[in-house]
Image (cartoon, rainbow, N blue to C red; front, top):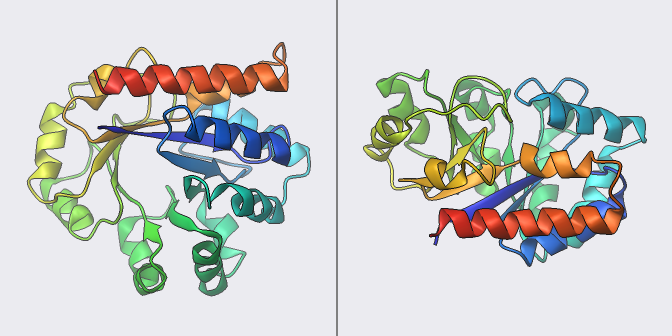
Length: 246
């Protein structure tokens, strides 16, 4: 069974909504939840997620909100924090990673920290049994892929193309997947541009997919009530889960 990872922006439009949506997604095919930590300049993300980030911050999102949401969600669904390093660094990594463990967070996704810089925190993550998710991209050399995936934890975030999330670019991923699998047995999840139309193709040869913009598009639709947003996101999760496993 291939896994579905869903990204949602924490605190948008409010904490209770994020909690309710998270639990509903977990009941409708989502195996792992990425709680996005709103940031003013999310450089790896496309316009939809950037907009949701800004809206959450405008509504007054604070890091304590992430902790409150996580306390309710993490005991019930496998949960990751996805955010940019400055946000985490300001919380003091030596205190934050043990706190993440205490809350039940299984890993962090930090797209703006290169592998080499992340090594400084390797022992901190390992000793607390919190994964620091590794990224590999089509632009990586064979040697770099081997280095990055050699000690990857939980899963490898395979960037489906060079660019930002949500662009939906189509590429033949099989040679890239093959080059990763030569060096690791860690599960490989494909992210960037995955939606209900592309999921089946992008999941071929991979162990799962990561979906963000497709959910955020629903959250940004102001014509929908909170309940309708949760229902539509949950239906989308079921569709994608079915697509990647049939």
